Length: 141
Image (cartoon, rainbow, N blue to C red; front, side, top):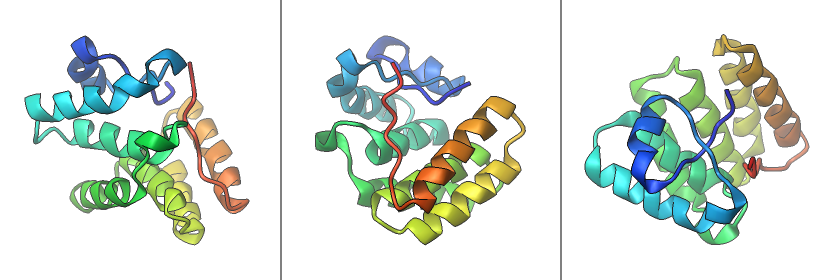
């Protein structure tokens, strides 16, 4: 299942299920959705991961914040180092701050940990971007 960001009313449930949808029409709503979800569930690591993913990969530069993404993703990986999704978020965050060596290392680690074939294939595509010195932008409708 691909990473997706969903709207305000169902963001908590969606994050708990690992589903994210970032329709182009609601890109500007995504940061507010995650801020709201963080207020509702401040200790939920999936909420933190979703925020970090959006800060690292949002196609609209106004909503990206590589430093916050990296800090959040590093913290998540310290607490759950074998979580492929959190490790992929860390890879995307590293790429967003132009640390492509770390992005390649972390995405490779995520791909190794990942058991879902579709997620692994998406991870391989991100890995190719990072090897080419490019960050990933999640513009999946």
